[in-house]
Length: 427
Image: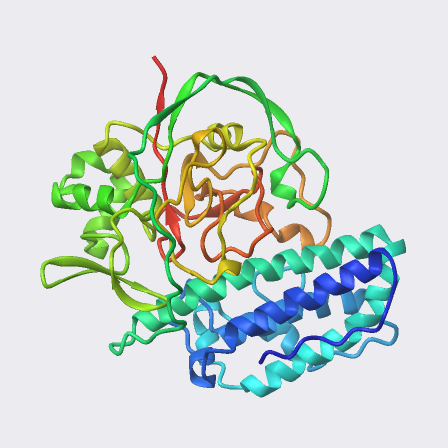
């Protein structure tokens, strides 16, 4: 599973893209390496996908959007893979039902690995041509960014899968945690005003990060730290899940229907809260950011705390110009860490550890238009009934996020490493 794609020698920009292609593809295979074939085939819920499917779908992306278009005398690796591993691209054609991906015992895991190797070998010729073709190189980079998104999904989906096993298996041993910093969270004043938001056009960005435009933000305050496990445990202890006045109507309906009493993976054992992690079940770390809470839970907690969630533009304005540093998947921790010190401008853990829910609906920016063709289905058609998260998580590949990056999920979703940071209006 750890085989690195072999690419021919090249020079200049195409060499850099080829090196990046090999590294990203190898990183995906490495995430699957600790798992058995049985682990890779299972699907624990409709929102998750088997690891085997992720391995194949990310390969399908390169075969479908690049090899079909650019390869001379293209012949598919397997004609049925076009349908089996199509996620949601209606313009491509038929799709296997998402909730039934775990029923695909065939192709086998070795066949999927062979599929990856075959496409990597065929992509080598395109990588040699990419430096002189901005459309081609742009599509390859989109495919790599897409694969990095699926690397995070592999970790979150595996975590949910293993949590359903009564044996509570360990995906990877927990590294030695860094020492936590002392000090309590504080409110930081943010001036607001007319600010430019959205991607400025330098380097890669997804289409939903633009166009860049100007918005007005009233003066506000932002918490220096994300909400911690200890903070959220106080909300639970105060009956937060039993008080409908704290919840949006649809959120309360979800609490009742799903019988939520605490964040996902929390469980009381011997009178103390524990949580399931990729390192097995552990006691909650009181100082670490809480994760696996839905938008509904984040919103209810903020109301209980006498605050609110920041808008995505408040978050972005506060983050603008700060280094993108934090606890990302590359560090191998794969779990939110206690703070080791304040970041730039006094904002701690702005990036990594946990995605931070904002109060903003996921909507198009003024002037947004999806790209023509099937690739235009990537982001735009999901701009309905979703909320924006910012900052990345401990499962996000390093270098994948930036201040303008807009993640989005429906308000009831909580299997991602999603947490929150409080905001309040100034004055």
